[in-house]
Length: 212
Image 1 (cartoon, rainbow, N blue to C red):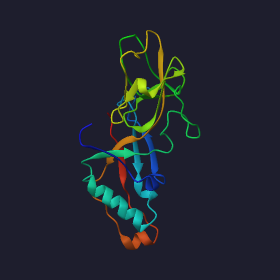
Image 2 (image 1 turned 45 degrees about the vertical axis):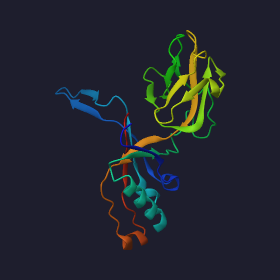
Image 3 (image 1 turned 90 degrees about the horizontal axis):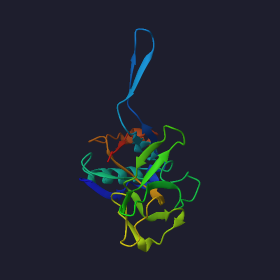
């Protein structure tokens, strides 16, 4: 991913932030009163407000320094989402069988990490491109595999099996992982009134997900 810094936004600030996924749905109301709905985006996009997590001048100073180093909106970075940063639910420990990421054919050696949302006919598949290094587990047909038999690119989320260990035809490849969200600042200026900040007013610092 061009113009991206593989560094995580300060986690102590992100922990108190506000945000989540958004979608863009076009709704047209017909003369009959019925609606026609169309999703303009194939995938959701997450937005956060980092300002909510800033409680001290030191934290504000750290965020300003981080903002300057990213040159405002120019460079992307990693964001830790406490609600949605695992292949499993937040309270569980991730396991190699959490998410099915593909089915072997005896030839394909690379599989993209992904996470599925929902269990019905409209299950949503989300590509995971920023796994946390050292926190990826892989299984083939439900059996955890030796990390020496595969490698995961922490900058793309692509899992590649070594020669001689490529999943055979019909074998289900699954994964468990922790991951970050690729994001960028959605402003080029941070405005802070220090007198108001001391009185409890917080700056608004919008952050938006970068869609792969």
